[in-house]
Length: 240
Length: 240
Image (cartoon, rainbow over all chains, first blue to last red):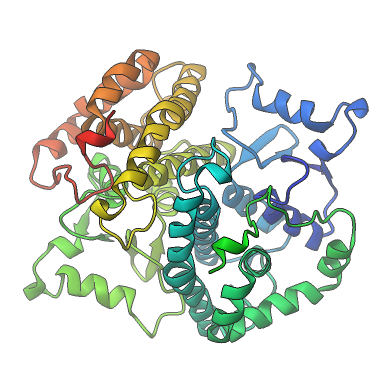
């Protein structure tokens, strides 16, 4: 079964959480919007999927995963679907509910990180909401990041310190890696100051980065760079 | 099986999406934090659950559902868990994934509605972020509500106009009811202006409100009133 991932090309964004799972599992997938239009792919293929008048189940926004005839949107929903298929979540049903619960908490954090540079409207440019962004980013650095990352550190510790869920690598570990990686890019000063409070989380970030398939992916052209177009943005004035 | 719901007393908040499902199913449940401390419940019981040092799976925030030994947080995750048990979602696995996808899109909208009165920080009072709230609420009214509710109207139409998912009432219908109900309270002028664009959605809101168990619930003391302490808040200056 070849998976088709549909996401905006040029940025990691929310699509990256799905890419990391597909890459770690060495899944057969195609990143449709980054492939040539001449092959029937590219952004036009993404737009066709978003604007498909014939489907009864239109997705609201990317990322979208197509698996045969099934079309699935919402990052955490995609990961919940892929987890068992890619062997990236434990077997027990209650453990899967718990993994999804953690993923939804990561989703909440990701929204707050996005809104730190877009606190007023996604339809406005950053420079049109810069004073508001500075206020919101200050709260993110001093209140929200300590709360969320302190929580994930605590969860990791209660589970033995190696993995967020169960005894082997799961999609939750991959997502925690991505969040820490993105925050290190977007808030280097704040993260340097805060990091001593999260030793296990940072060790997990390092371990995931060194996983053979993830290491190969990060070194490849398939891994897009962080940028001020994406979810995690580096604006020095937001870093305190 | 008696369900225990743990949520802040005094507000509908995110807990209301769970309450509506439990009420429609006439489930055996107790709203723990609203029960007497003298019976071992009340807010102290909620705090004990949040601060339980012995659990390996601590919830980040309410609402939290306890079902036997299983403790589940994140509103959409709780509804996904309850759906099959309360007969509030169709059988087919792919349909359940789709229902959850819609619920997660509702979750996104709910966060945006919350942030329209708290665009800078949940830790600050509304009056400390009022100019920012006015800017964000204007974007919510003119850009985001039309986009989200237009999407739900479209989904409802593609499914025949009666239910969001499948052929019978699901937890998604209950959540759409709650969002429309809350928006009617918080943004009466904007909703009066926008409503003609969403005839099927408003008819669904009316039908759910008239469902015997929901009608009985809404007329009971168990339904808390909307207020400027909750998720949906009426501030005239945010209504345009």
